[in-house]
Amino acid sequence: MRNELLSPAEMAEADRLAIAAGPLDGYGLMQRAGEAVAAIVLARYPGAMRVHVLCGPGNNGGDGYVVARLLAEAGVDVALWASGEPRTGSDAALAAADCTLERHPLSAFTAEAGSLVVDAIYGAGLSKPLSGDAKGAVDIVTGMNLPVVAIDLPSGVSDDSGEVLGSAFRAVVTVTFARKKPGHLLLPGRERCGEIVLADIGIREEIIDQVAPRTFENRPGLWIATFPAPAVDAHKYKRGHTSVFSGGPSATGAARLSALAAARSGAGAVTVLSPANAMHVNAAHLTSIMLRKVDAVEDVHDLIGDRRPSSFVLGPGFGIGDKARDFTLAMLAKNRQDGAVEGLVLDADGITSFRNATATLFEAAGRPDAPALIMTPHEGEFGRLFADIAADTALSKLAKAREAARRASAVIVYKGADSVIASPDGRAAINGNGAPWLATAGSGDVLAGIIAGLLAQGMPAFEAACAGVWIHAEAGSRFGPGLIAEDLPLAIVPVLRELTGSAAR
Image 1 (cartoon, rainbow, N blue to C red):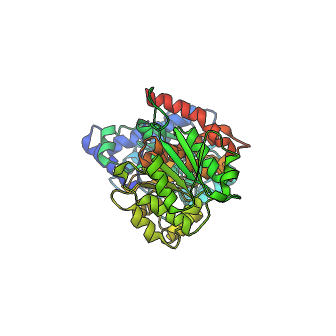
Image 2: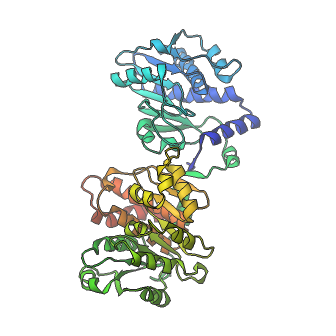
Image 3: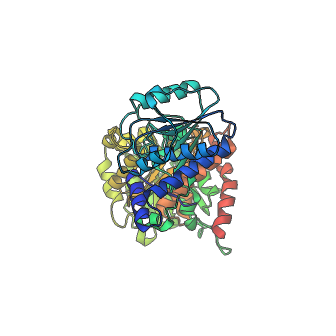
């Protein structure tokens, strides 16, 4: 399954190109869409005492008219409810004309227990809050807790942002076409969609290629081609060297979590860079992970010259202030073409340290030969670096991450249950396998280490960030209740084993 996501405009363009290419016209695509939904209803709900099909005036409603006709032809008891009339001459008008069932006004909608609702009111393309008869239908269906099969998207959910526009259906199954939309993955829309079924209605792959979408669902198919699979003659430094900066003696645990995650993710060598006053604390807890004293920028330069680590993590437990800024800028001042530093993962305190010095950070990251910068902010940290973007309520989480990446010349991992990964070149991915068990202290430190470990092994920055987010979430989902951050480095091992096998093939 391919990973592209289509915005409303891109889906409209895909429809237009598919119709122009033939052999299906617009009504033919609508017929295919209705057939796919009707098949789901018949297969999943054979015992429904009645099916209520709710149709709006646009193409989503046109799909609904096809569904109602096909279900009635299959012997299902169908009640058809309409909101407005399709535009004369439109494909939806053709579908309505072909459906001879009695039409009831949506304003009079009623239902009975044991029935099923097919939501074909608006689906994708809604840009204002649900109101009037449509909102009334949502209230009735929600109050009765009736199962809903939604066409394309539950009416009331924005296909672009995943926001609930005033009110929305909560579907058990959502049937969408050609490709998923961002609203299927972004919260809270994702929770309203239920199971998402992607139906083939005849829009060919070359049509999607022509549309050239730049947004993707974050799944292994997006990055597995660059996933590291060590060669038989690999030694530890061929597998990459990651260095993680530690905080002071009372704040060393976060760095060790990152370091262990980098090692588990495949980095051949990992070093914790510790201030002198924390050396004994770190030494007491490290075995396979190396330890080196780093107190000043000069020590950073010496490390890079001596050991040539490929990637760094700075921020977990490090402390906020000048030292974090100085160390970050020292690494970003290196030339990636010289092979000195491939990239830096900036997290937690490292991000917050630049809240009043964003221009300095972004300028350093924007040099053409600078090491790759990957920043992993949660919502609060995002707001500290990108206050105006965060406050813009007209922007979706996807749009915010994309604009932040462009401004910062960095890969942005905007964390959350629906993490968005955005690249300065305009690519973005939405993660769909997030798990509530990851909401635990130290989880983000592990994520930073996984990303850095993959970066050290040669994965490009955007792909490493996407892979790290997916692996981290997958491990959390598989582990389940009781997960704490210390469990995660080992929990990623079976996930990595499967991915490595796929990459080797």
